[in-house]
Image (cartoon, rainbow, N blue to C red; front, top):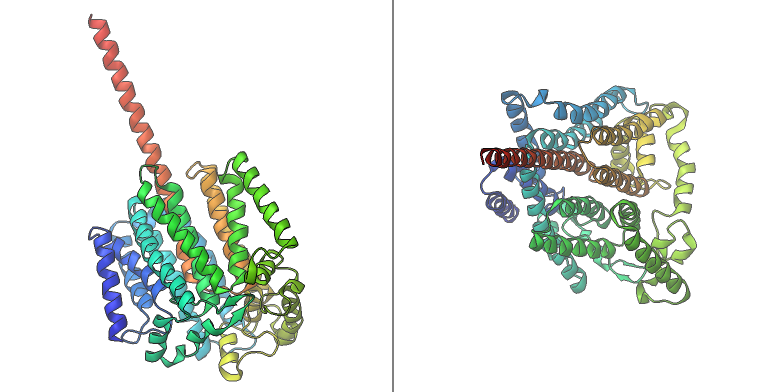
Length: 476
């Protein structure tokens, strides 16, 4: 434990230096550091590092919310209203599960996880006060991420994840994660789990971090050329880590989301060139094995809906598998759980007692997870309604000209990418997704407000200068 405590202290001190000893900003940055560096199994004094900072920052957000009247600020109220929709539906569904007694141990654990997921959304909504804070946090996590991504490539190249081996030596419930590098998949010599251990979870974390880094890249001025190079290097390392994780769900979600964003971001000329290049590579790839030993894996990504492209080497998240599981879902839920599900925490209770389900396995996919625990009603209200509320708020700010059209499109693609990933694999790193939504939306709001204030200030200066010139000419 002392090793991980030392790593946490180093992360805290680095965050303080990076944010010039702005301790609240450093706390927010350290929370993201903990999510990126520590698997959930790592405990310090009985709590995961991210949980410690989650409770601490939530308490601070309550204190400053009351002291500085942050709860009454219109933007904070609107952003938190989205979360209140989610919380209200969840609490409404909690006692209605057909397969769980109200607040039995597994449901209490599910409620605890729910609270830890929504806390980051709250404290990122209230504690962020200006764009400089957000940029400090995003720059810090981009640099930390760059080191993590370089380590990931090194681990894949050497076929040894020394960090996860250290974690598994201290915490027995992580045992087996280091063996992921021994699993071959479509030409990949092992699957990279990075600092999290599980390749599927790790790739979901990277998907969210990609939008953190890209959002910062879009808003930095051209004068910050050095930082733009660092961010490009970080995004390149991130993509390599996602590829080496062997997770098709993250790659498909990343390509679809980023591709949709490029439709608005890039010029028609750049789009035409890129589209031509992609079509050429696809045609070439279908005709010749240009990707070498990775050809099977690349084919399974491009044709993710066609299971025949995997040639039996790549399992999981396939269309045929999901169709088979959809049939098994009806048997698990039954008529009594179809409306409101079997209850929050039912899946963890089942797996703890019986192991993996013979058909639904770990209940991967947001759809299977939601319908099993919350029913058809819960799936629509708890998730689809929530995603729509997220997009509606961004649209509302766009209509008020509080964020630009490109900002709205960026947020939509961020939500879309995560939805694709969650439906293909599961709602992993849900709490990070929520805080990422709050962080990026507030960043775009602050950045646009500050630019408008600067433009108005420049207009006032110009008017005063013109008036001074006219007065001088009049006196002559």
